[in-house]
Length: 254
Image (cartoon, rainbow, N blue to C red):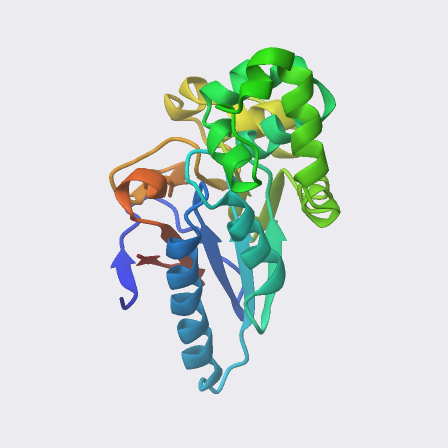
């Protein structure tokens, strides 16, 4: 699918620095099939830009939620680790679902809440099933230990070393959003991963335009103070990537 142009009718222009091209990828939730397709589109776009007379610095930003809900979470993390976009600098942000994985690895009592958010899909992708009779007999500590045994060290390192936000030019990238009234560099990790209504309902100027996922929208949505790009890939088959260059906005979608 070619680039789709979108409009930003904000009263002021938001730009990324000259010579930069940014690809921001929304919530993936175990849909490794869609991510493969989207990364192929990004590669094709990067290759096309290489023919330009002006060198371009390509930046790829994953906005988080690699895991849960979709059934191929382990494969998706392997893909991200083993098949990066050539010719691009990559930044991996942490979503609330990655945080729930880390929480469960440390505290088995967080298990019920994680399962509520779709953690059973992640467990199955690593070979652990909540339908296993041993779980019914031994409970959450057993499930935690089985998951620990199967969760690769490099996957743990990947989650632990993710950032909570990234800035390029006039854009602030994070998973969920920001708390209104708090300077961007003073935002708490919890808000950056979890905030919803307070952020979504705010018409404040956040200092930069916030690009976020976390809250599903029918299509990439551009508002004066934010851009929402979580198009619910795990259930809609539509994984979206926002492409920013100078003051131009485009979208790549599966």
